[in-house]
Amino acid sequence: MIDFKNVTKIYGGEVKAVDDITMSVNEGEFVILLGPSGCGKTTLLRMVNQLETITDGEINVNGQNVKEMDKIKMRRNIGYVIQSNGLFPNMTIEKNTMIVPDLLGWDRKKKRDRFNYLMDLIGLNPDEYRKRYPHELSGGQQQRIGVARAMASDPPVMLMDEPFGALDPIIREKVQDEFLTIQKEVKKTILFVSHDIDEAVKMGDKISLLRQGQIMQYASPTEMLHRPKNDFVSEFIGKDRVLRSMSLYTVNDLVEALGLKSKEEDIQDTKEITIDTSLRVALSMLLNKEADELLITDDQGEAHGSLTFDLIETFINREVRGA
Image 1 (spheres, one colour):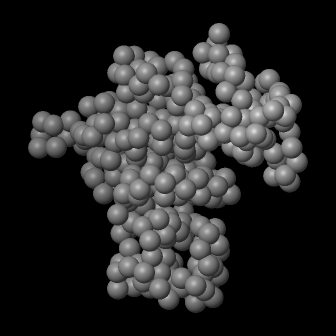
Image 2 (image 1 turned 30 degrees about the horizontal axis):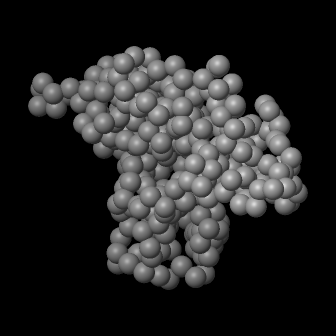
Image 3 (image 1 turned 180 degrees about the horizontal axis):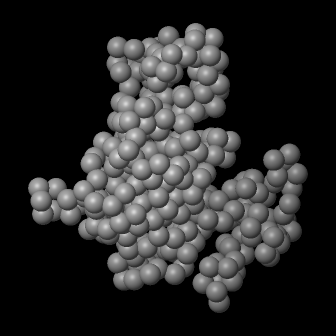
């Protein structure tokens, strides 16, 4: 869907922001551009929709060279979400969301139906928020409106530049979860800039880790965490990559590999979690002494057994460390 072929960006005739990058993003994939500040990830993203010119090489979107595409038409067919959400303060939420459909000449009913669908998708009541203005919404709600606006014309490709970076950690995690739920339904091809390894591991199908305009490794989160390609990758991921890799597994993965224990009757300090809970969340609850034992239930509330620290440790040694 998005192909980068020997893409280079030079500023001022000498500074290489992007240096000979070649990689492909398949249809429906969620790819994270990850790396420290100044590594070229935002520049690479902005070259896709021609907000930055390409010095050398080429970028093809759905088989078409972006240099040969009309910039305005192209941008109307690519969703773009930035950290500050970019909502217009003098426009209602409905007007903000429907900017691109307005430009495309959609009729009133089609726009209203699309707005209602998108608001339901992001978990906000369309009638409650239709006539509100951005300043009346929380930061998390504004960011969700920014995502809805980017999806308004149903573009096949979405570009997202640290869209959740300005949110506080608790709201940020909630919005990340909501967006992953949305992505399961809409299956967009997404290029997403982040500097946060935890966000990348949680959200990406693949991660492209950049340094000084070059790709250090392009791989799935599992491969990058377990088999870092070089010292830079290993250092960027950090020594706690085993803990980070727990985000890739759910309680259900552990159940399928090891099963669960029966509830120990003499343990009183327990909490219930669902079987699709991240193992990292479960481990954190046990390490923080929120409970001595976690009782596992499915979506219907049926009990499956109990989870303890020892069982998670066994899973880590078996599945992650390969011991």
